[in-house]
Length: 309
Ligand SMILES: Cc1ncc(COP(=O)(O)O)c(C=O)c1O
Image (cartoon, rainbow, N blue to C red; front, side):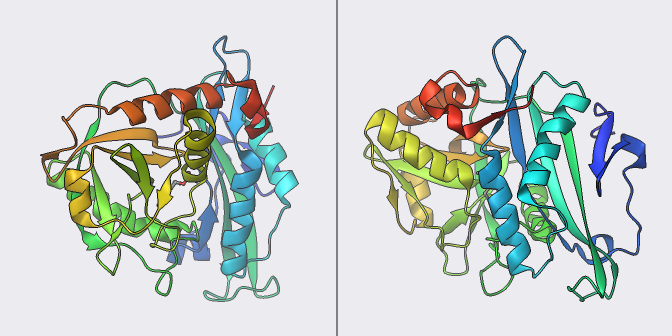
């Protein structure tokens, strides 16, 4: 069963044994997917003595923004949740790479209520081991999904809502059934948006190009991290502009970026090889830099890391 490597979870103020982390089936979270969450990674240092949570405050700021748009009353402060995210890794004794998932949810009460007098708001945090793929040598084969991306005026992708991932589920399952490793989703205007759980970047003529944050995407923390690293470490200015579907077919490089997907090379799209069908040079370099940043090997980026021990 997923997550059974974790002994403890945190639920509404208490560290509880994993099997005791339960909420009632009548909650809005269960009935209608009324929740917002964050997905973070913690990286062990080379000696496995420390685990660094990557960009913890930024993730909790985004969680606040998701709550704000959903008109949720925050049940805990960002500082309290930050402390829990770190402490949960320690309590579980994890020294390896981990994934951390703080979630805020609507509990029992009126199904579409939002104020504390009419519906409870709760929170939980999970932490489980998850190995990094940053040293993997394989790219992935993607299709362009027939499903269109959620839109800001339909179900805003800017909100990291649990329910948004029902669309991601449709996309991923279809891609899997069709024999692909992943899928790229176009928005309602037919422009490239993102993946089901990651943002997307292409490289043309040596320049990284990303769909803008108004293309129907999550405002990805990894995306802005990479834009910063391209400029500071490689002297390369990324361009944010609309991306056409057919640019995926002629791009020199394509990659997914996100906390979970890290920097994942996409080596074919709709069976068109990307470049020569292997991991391209910019992807290779930025991936190595990102790996060194998250593992604490580059002191100038240590301010992005929260050590848990
Ligand atoms: C739909 C979607 N887009 C983009 C991302 C990447 O966001 P981040 O880099 O902040 O993890 C994620 C991952 O959380 C995601 O689920």
